[in-house]
Picture 1 (cartoon, rainbow, N blue to C red):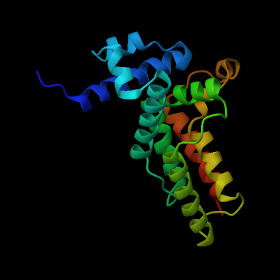
Picture 2: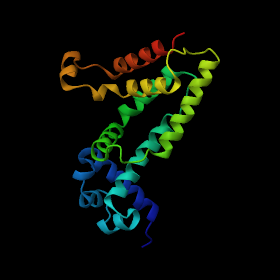
Picture 3: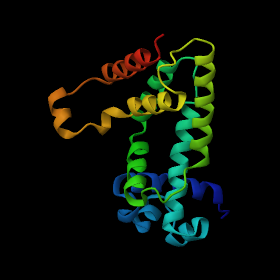
Length: 188
């Protein structure tokens, strides 16, 4: 029987994303990942070297997925924020893995090159749009991008108490709040 190493790696990463999004790096278990991927623990160490390296590969996979799903776009920043919101709604594991990464590793991890490149491209595009007079210069390009990213991901980050006051809101309404807020930030 021919083994497909790439398929095994993909299954391991997919299983790792689910495991680490739920339990974090410290709580994630390689035996559960291997079982979910229909692989064995030895394959995890063979392909990734360690549980930490598997976490890194899984995190990079979710980031790459978001960037591919929502490429940097400064032509319509409100639409960009809306697309990010949509992507986060479809992929709650992204925010959860990012939170676990921050909690368990703090600032010790170097930034991922894919995120840095994506953010740099968006910042350059925002600066160009500001120079062309298409959007407000009220915020520096880097600050505007930071605000957009936070707005697009804000709903899951609400405290339990604030969420109780707001009550349940349909995704379309939450999305509209995000896009309206970005429109207000960039208005000339």
